[in-house]
Image (tube, rainbow, N blue to C red; front, top):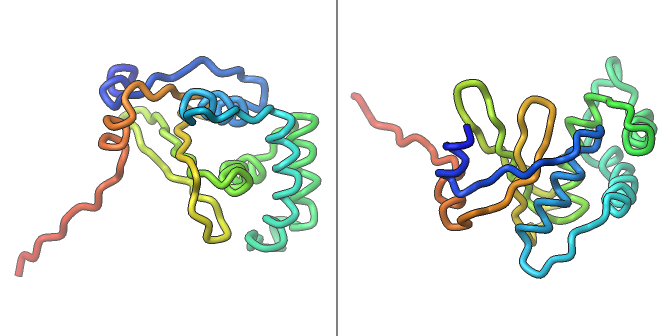
Length: 168
């Protein structure tokens, strides 16, 4: 995997696994990827996510109310942010809220047993993102990424559609 990442112009940076690895990965990736950009503090990230949670819950979540009570979403986020109480629903939506709160596109490069895949998480509200932030995910752990070669990364991680051929 390290060889593939290096070929793509990426270097995974060690990231704290304290229950908020996504926030640490985002902050540390921002620090090395955004030219002249002061990286947000973990507290700043948390405060923006609290603000974004109400808007997100009210405008974007389409929960099946038989399974999930939407009014609990902000409480779950609060427990996740303050107590590090893991909640898979909040954890699944955290990258989208993070991208929206900071108006960035987060490229999550995820390692699987047989391949590496890149999922792009764009901000909601129809805004154009101001930065691209690359982070790495293996299992449930996120890590920061240093871009060794930004041009190589752009060429390597783009998912290109397969061309259809007509066989008639």
